[in-house]
Image 1 (cartoon, rainbow, N blue to C red):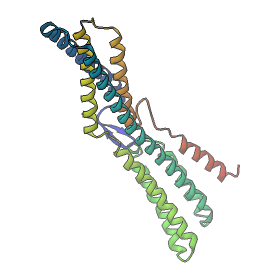
Image 2 (cartoon, rainbow, N blue to C red; image 1 turned 30 degrees about the horizontal axis):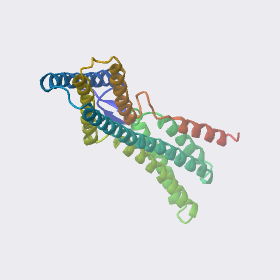
Image 3 (cartoon, one colour; image 1 turned 60 degrees about the vertical axis):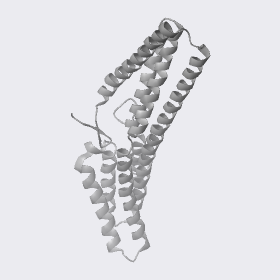
Image 4 (tube, rainbow, N blue to C red; image 1 turned 180 degrees about the horizontal axis):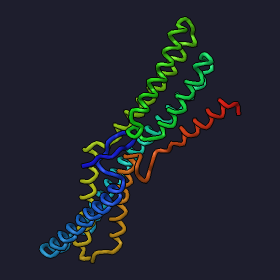
Length: 266
């Protein structure tokens, strides 16, 4: 199967597949679970008569409460990691801005070159890591080499150490963003637990309808679709880019705009 790029990380499905496959599949699974529970409830009612309604109501309420807890926990998991990836982009922009300003202490012939490299690098960081390809790696290597050359030529100067540390921050910020991009997937145990609780809860909803002898309510369609959309939202948020919820490149664009204005004396 072809794999797509998510902020430089391979993902199993393109965004279109997430939208057009996950929602219908989850909706069908939930609807089938409700139907199985409904038929089981009708069968129990036909063979054993009515059960105390309070018992099934309590069990259904407890199961739905657990489902809500699992959904909230999983959503919080993905939201936390999404925020972490967003913060890593801001930190990278700050690291680039620091080195950009420190270019003032470089020799007059080197300062414009370093700033030009940083400007090109800011453009590269606004693309997914995989799309940037070797250009981003080459730019980082040139930026680091410029900082090392200056530190070597001014080994006895304290400012040389500051420039070297600023160069390291740029490299570390990129590494941090790459690591966060590869560690965003929800653990399989949490996913399995969420689907297990969802199936049990919706099965109990159908069972209660069948055991009470009620007809299938059309309102269940909205519940099924809502659950499918919530699961899709969690998956899309976990993916972070390429879907409906994307990480914004605004921090880097704003940094680039302000640094260009700074260098032009505006």
